[in-house]
Image (cartoon, rainbow, N blue to C red; front, side):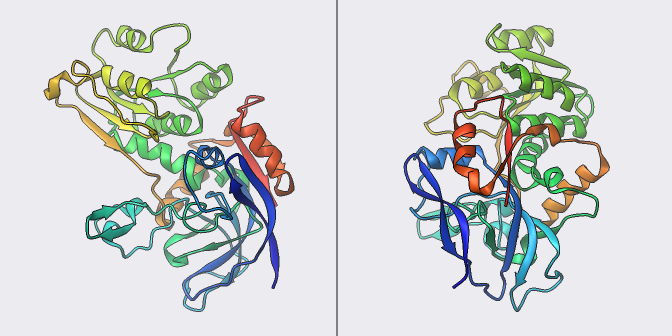
Length: 357
């Protein structure tokens, strides 16, 4: 049986490169030869044992590659075609999909809905930090890469860009809005870019890392608040003359940032939450206006599927957003353990790492 190299979860604090069999292709599947992928913050949660996955699972959920083999029932694609697949790979026919929430594709139970989400790569099935990845429901999930776009240009589309843009979209941003984005990691930076595209005319971002603050300005921030130097809630309320913001986007996943994002909303404003929270959240009575503030709290899981990927790549093709500055480091798949060490410890100003096979 033909074999491939793959980054495998072995145990807490150990993701290692191993040999695994190249997967067999079912009727609705596509086998993709991965040319470029990356490491996500969620992968680091897996590495640290903070998110449970099966031992022996191949990690990774952001694939760019070439179709190696198509399932017998797959039409509309050809072998040798350059494609991406979203981090979320919905079936297209589940209850969640048919209700318009493809990212929440999951499994129903007697006790209600269990949202595994459509996140399967590196979660419930083998992922793409490998030489090959098997894409399920290929006709719903493969998206051809437009001619002229490089792997690196579309590398953010499967997850980071789609997630960040969802944060902006869920905020219902309108022309003339003032928007605040808490945390300018890769997802927060994409939320900033998305807010600009949607028409926000004043964007205030919050971070403390100089390199991230600079990229934030390049992607659309009008003011950047350094939370190590000032209280961000007080600073943002001063910048808005006490009005507050129309939309706040929380892109870190902590109690402190969630609460701050709530406190700066104007009456009737929206908090769009992108953070992945590991403990219960508390909603302070005053920040919540005792439930009388007409505020909305929206959450999001990265939208996936081929139409979402097409739209993300159209944005890149248009030149309206340039996410190349997010790729700060390059590694070969053979060196992925070193890449994990760099990324998990956030050394050397790393934002995203491009892993090539």
